[in-house]
Length: 197
Image (tube, rainbow, N blue to C red; front, side):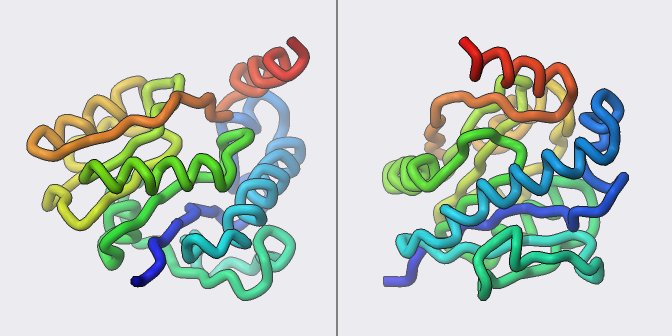
């Protein structure tokens, strides 16, 4: 049986090109440093897990990056498609009958979360990990999925998950526990407070 696939969306870590909303609050250099740490702490343990095959979906595909420090050597890469986030995710997931896609801005995201996602796909057509801001930190599909799973989604706002779920009315959907993503200085401050308490 073919192993399922985990796709990690990754932007080439370049100053001023990553975590722009976070950079507005903490500065571009600190945002870049945070992004590098988050990507590495997410990608390394997930890519080393043999229960699935991990692929980095990178953008821009031509950008030079020290991917060997950010993910294990030999982790395959694919270019993200052009278009909005929904089109890029749809194209990345399309070739695989069972796949999960994640980003790299969820503190503590690890192999246990991926395993939970694939268990959920054993009884559902799709799985989502809701984010506290109305988006989602994980999306996964089995072979039965809508023709346009991300149509009419309002991205980067409180409606992203609800808009996506509207496309799955005729499908079985599983939800994982919610998590906080870090998009802004306020998110980072909330994360630090949670770690202290």
